[in-house]
Length: 136
Image 1 (tube, rainbow, N blue to C red):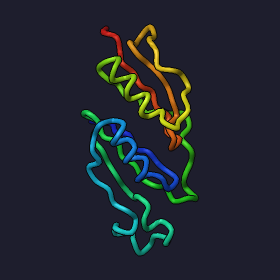
Image 2 (cartoon, rainbow, N blue to C red):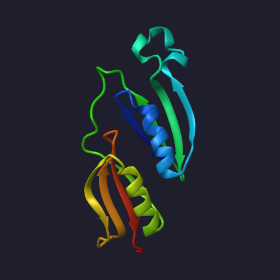
Image 3 (cartoon, one colour):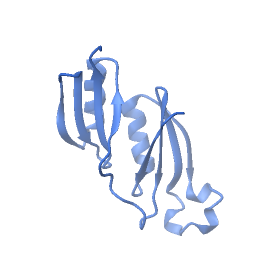
Image 4 (cartoon, helix red, strand yellow):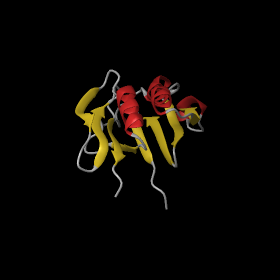
């Protein structure tokens, strides 16, 4: 069994995943719009160029995303994307990159469990926790 992360967006999925590609140093594996999908005929004209599915590999994990139809979109609440990184320098770099035009909730810093830990909400409204754990 393997868990993956799926993010819903309000029309900004393509821009968000291009941003994450840059911030995380990874590549988008797949993207399909509503207009390219088998559901194209049932999609409203304003959704045709929006993303129905996209994915990227982040280490051994996968992050997927889509633009939710406007009447189905809900702002993320009660969850965060937790990203474990190997070094304090990587934690600081990723935190700074994801924080561009975002809101820092907890500055990146050493904690009792981590060499570095910080929390932010990125410019697309996605909450992130960046963690560089201390050895157990």
